[in-house]
Image (cartoon, rainbow, N blue to C red):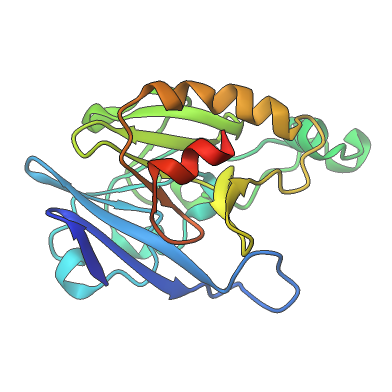
Length: 209
């Protein structure tokens, strides 16, 4: 764990679902960021005790990034999980095979086990703005109080440097995602905080977009 700047913490942990068949690296990143009286955990996994004691909420860049959110017992702010119609659109799934099925992502939260708040792109609590990446539930968060973005899978480093990641989606191209994210370059971003990979500077973001 290290403090990148006052009130901004980064740490990495081995993802429990990782194996050698995965296309993404074993270690994933999480962040703890202070804003006023709140301390927010982004895509948290293996939260250090000193940060867990301060935490007031969990924010997920994508529903499949729930990681340790369930065990933390905090309010969770997240984009919604995929529906079976999303699987048809995103992956070309056969509608007759998936019709009516529910995603396992965040099933516990949707069942009311913890306090859940579901949001798409646009204005979020805590003064955050969310931008859609390869889809409306894989987001990039703009945090203006620290001039940083926290990015989900759409903009991450899966071992070959920071880049657009499509993850097998068939409904969108790399150029589509670049066009969608290009407005980020109009923001005074100083640091990129990806869920996969390590923090990067604005120059690397410019090379991608």
